[in-house]
Image (cartoon, rainbow, N blue to C red; front, side, top):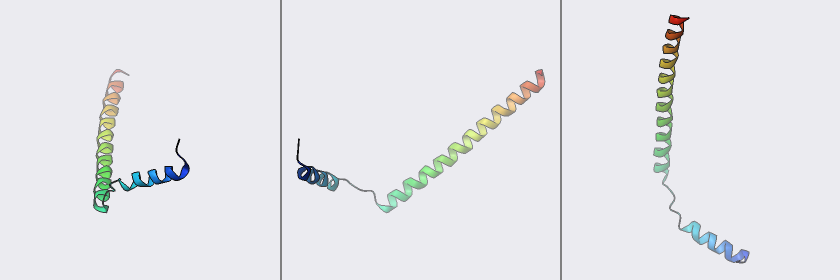
Length: 63
């Protein structure tokens, strides 16, 4: 078990090793996340619409 002072020194040295992303990398990855979320929403909307219409057709045909 290390004392609190050693712990803080070790923590500081580990944080210094972290490679932080650049502002441009953060913006690009954020934009990609939003684009993929929009594409997924459009895809699932389309699938939902097709299933709904197919079920309506089946239910009105046999109902």
